[in-house]
Length: 407
Image (tube, rainbow, N blue to C red; front, top):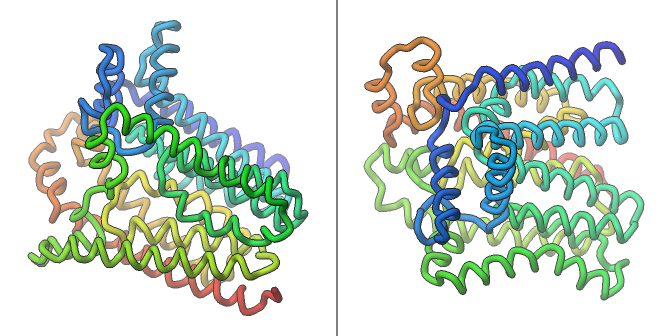
């Protein structure tokens, strides 16, 4: 068992080192160019939030870019390589923390399956070395937050609850999406003193509010338009993609408002539920979070392939306690989305065009065809269908576990 696990860990490290060596600065997504542009504006004394349209989140990632640029200048290393290395290191940290979490709470056998998912599923590797977006940081902070909350539910230690607030707060500072998981913090809070509650709320929200307030001070309208009101880009996937495909794009704005209200009602309902229960079992914490974070990109108003890192680390851990049917659905889902990502990142110029790079084929015409709204919606249709099936089974498993839980 130990030798097998060590072999898998070595295999994982080998794939990441190989990717860092093989994927040079010529293999880059559009986000690479965005990050370089952000750094350039910063170096010239400008405000990249106002002078580019590449930043739509609180400033955790821009400050990370500044630090990486400083290291690049100090060490004479390529900035794109350093960004890749940092993201790979973040992903490895996420895997290590997931590994330790499973060893502590479940059997050691489950960790092999976890590592295999990271090795055989190409999505994490593609996102950190080709796409180079920073959503792996969101995945890391969310996982740390949920594991801290799970520990609080087991041991009722206020320090665990505060850690959960702090990690989710860092997630919100990176991208505001983890705010939707805040209702989980309400479970079993009646045991906490008022000063602990106030400190926890401060850890959760104050860094983001302070940073956005500063951005607003520098450029009010840009902050409202690009950060506060940002909802990603509709029409390339899922419901909004199908609305564009069938010529009903005028309903996209209506659907966005409907989904926002739906998400708000879910959040309010979850808050009322969690504040009433005495405790919540570990599987339900991860199931609830995975459902929410999978639902937003699949049923929401906008989509980006990098959003897979919101839910994929949670789903990889859910395999340890999932029912037989759910495990089968997860495996099928992983196969479908892996094929989709491989095709997308092979032919899309904005996503690295791996096929063109490794074969020297001219795939510009193919890339333009499949990079349109219609092309991307059709290409991702199997992924959308598989994700809806997975959402159904995750929700079913959540309610089954709820019916078996005494609160």
